[in-house]
Amino acid sequence: MRIEGDYDEVHWYGEVRVDGRPLDPGPSLKVRNHSPDGFAWGYAGSGPAQLALAVLLAAGVPEPQAAEHYQEFKREFVERLDRSRFALDVDLDDWLRRKGAGRSRLLAQAVLDPSRVQRPVDTSSLSAWAEGILARLADVAVQGLPDAYDPPEEYWYDFWPDLPWDGRGSDVLRLILGHGEFPLVAQAFTAKTGLDLAGVLAEASLQR
View (cartoon, rainbow, N blue to C red):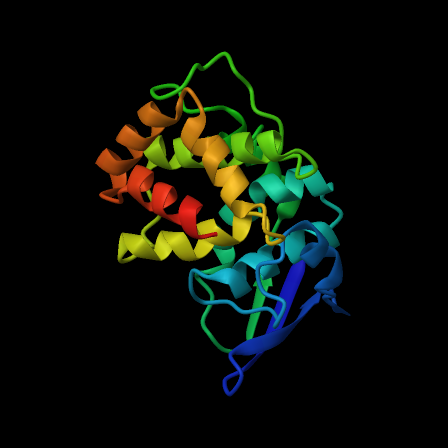
């Protein structure tokens, strides 16, 4: 798969082609509305997240699998691109095979019950949505944050867009905070990253 992009340095967004075809943001925005203004790359943020998701969907990756893996795809490929014109060749089938079930589907052995396998996030259910986000937090608690998050606080730019944008974000946050495994995840997350997960989510749940 060949991905090409032309960057608009004035507006900080760009046009992208996948195997020569213009990449339509529409399908990805229906799954996660990170960046309605357009695609971007070369840093950790909402524009790169939207691009990563759109690329996976355009390549024919089923929506649940794309929703599970696009943040990893963003970190491994999209964030590392120069913020200019680019051309990138990716063996997507090989990359997905190497991911196996995906780390976020197996809640971290050292933090949560390793026998519990997580399904991809079902956004039609707030409880499933909360479970999916908790799984990603548990993954960070064990693996740590990629080097691209420097300082670590930049992680929140990618975290908040995963919440519902229709006013239910505080409901999902409260479900996460009330989950029986959250205290253990939060403790390990903070120890690994230095970020006050419990405090940040508690404060946000009162504001969103």
